[in-house]
Image (cartoon, rainbow over all chains, first blue to last red; front, side, top):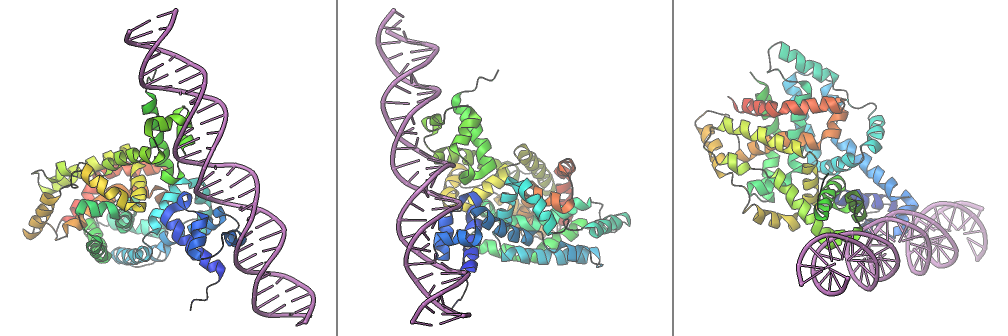
Length: 202
Length: 202
DNA sequence: TTTTGGTTTAACCATATGGTTAAACCAAAA
DNA sequence: TTTTGGTTTAACCATATGGTTAAACCAAAA
């Protein structure tokens, strides 16, 4: 049987509720019920709704500002980097499909509150300098179509993340059910990098 | 001077507040204050928070399920359609940059509630049949790289919409301010279709 | 067996929040 | 000038909600 501590049970429940409802839609009682504990314990262990939320939010945030560094700063050739990044990023998001919408929703509504905290947590934000230089270099060498590095990064991340956020919209526009949609998403792990790389070819 | 009716003032204020805070974060008092009217008038004109919200939501939704039909069902060649669609879609989103996050956030949290209503409002959802056929046709003729039509549509829409949703994240990752970000967005009106079309070329 | 210190609970509390109501208002019609 | 019907307001109301507290619990140490 599971021998989780109360503290852990609360965190797990809070994660679920906050991701589902967002901060303002989440109810402490709801979290307590899902954790199967008395509501007072939420405050005993985490003080306040805000404090509890901050913990869940920061953890979630880490998940979508991914190990860009690792890949971006390596010495691999550009196309290889793209393949690797897209593959790993999609897998990461796929593991927690609710995270992107949650994080971006809360981040948009309280930019000041987190921008700073998040920056220190990732020590100054990710360093994409090397990747940027590489893109410019390849463009100058005439190996790829010229493109603003920021634009390329934006395109790649959009293609990775947005399908998860836009799911209900896509299902409607495309008239497809959950299963068909999942199939499409699965294909994207390789499809996206192929698309991007082809877009860069001359 | 503005001679707006109370009803219109309420709607405008509600739009602002709901888009900013979402349903559960929005406060009726806040809407009343922004509209400069007594809170009771909200109920006098719109009955309840839910009813008021539904109106704002449906209007917002229309904005991001755009005139796909018009373009998708036309007889223009594929690349031309893509250019036209991307251009118009980005302009539409640009006019209301808060809408996508708002709609997708609420839609994700209450799929059942709206999926149906929205379907009837758009009479059965957009018809992309012709565009789908066209993509398959071009692929078979060997004019473009083969790609699942749904995947292509997803890619295009992701590239158009996501930058607006992911703004705070991108600004952090790329270390750029509002102005620089706007510049990047402006470029995308043409940049995105170029990117997509190039990705389709053999 | 008793003490101790962390854990859990039921009962509360203050405030926020969506919503209602009766009375006051006010411009146009009679 | 009076009546009428829609509009606006202040005062309320019931309930939801985040948070607190004193007492009960309970396992391990003494």
